[in-house]
Length: 246
Image 1 (tube, helix red, strand yellow):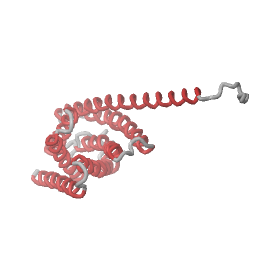
Image 2 (tube, helix red, strand yellow):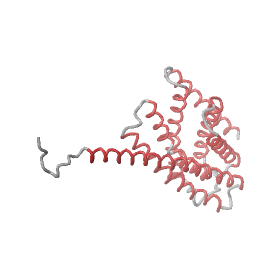
Image 3 (cartoon, helix red, strand yellow):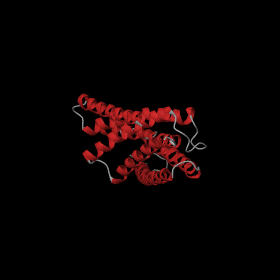
Image 4 (cartoon, rainbow, N blue to C red):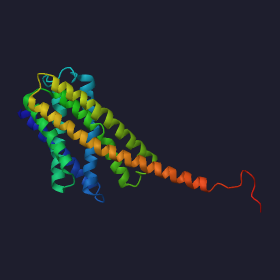
């Protein structure tokens, strides 16, 4: 546990130092800009690492829920736990997030601490990290595009499409499979099972917000298309195909 505590502390300090460096390099930008750069970098790194651990290195979380932690799983969880501690502190200090996001952070932190303390169930928790974090780079990219005035472009449309697609397919669909494996397996702690269920409920709450956003965006596009179509029809010459008399 001493080595785990040291690794988490080093991770927290590393993310904090990186944030300070971004603030120094981007003095003309807001503190949120620097924090989201850290979040973007963490999302890319941890998605790659947790994806490798879950999909390639193993053990497979759907069949080995509750198995002992591997060293690589421990390193990945320590790295992301340090980030979540940093981000929770930043959100509380600047008061930028709502209760749902803060609850999500506290659930994530509690689950990773429990798994590291018990020495088992890292397989399913690392898989949860993967399906949760894979959409984070797209979410941050969307924010940056909005900040620089490039959100209402084709690139913004592509980012939104893949964000919604990956969220529904992996975070909701994949998360359901992981939760079922965790609850059905006898080895995981009941506390971890309850936390996993709570985390999935939070994901469902996020899904409702995303579906509302997607619905508003589709309706806006439909009304815009209908308006352009009506203008085009109204501008057509009423001459039955014959040239109007001069």
